[in-house]
Image (cartoon, rainbow, N blue to C red; front, side, top):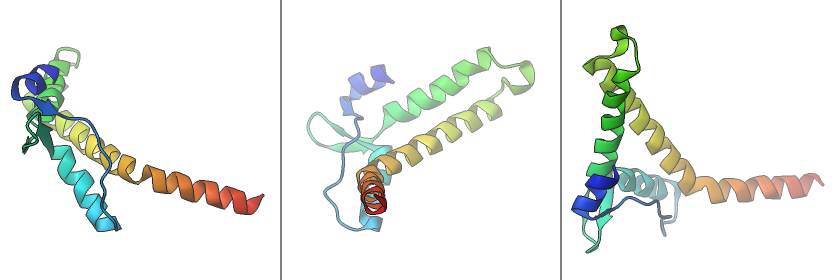
Length: 110
């Protein structure tokens, strides 16, 4: 993943949105998972994320039994990993709000 990001100058780091409202923030987190900014500020597809995720899934074929070491299973593992990463990205966007809500509910109980 790092090699691809270095070649096309991607910055795949997570950043919080400055958006207000659930859907706008959800959209921001979703788009920023599949698109990355370059050094120049231009947005491009997050090639490194896809290459790294699917590359790891195909490399994992070496450790799986023959019945699961095939293209179909590798694509399934890669897609599952991408979906989990997307979910994590959305969760991170909302985590500060969730944490604040949990603290306030704990304070009310005390």
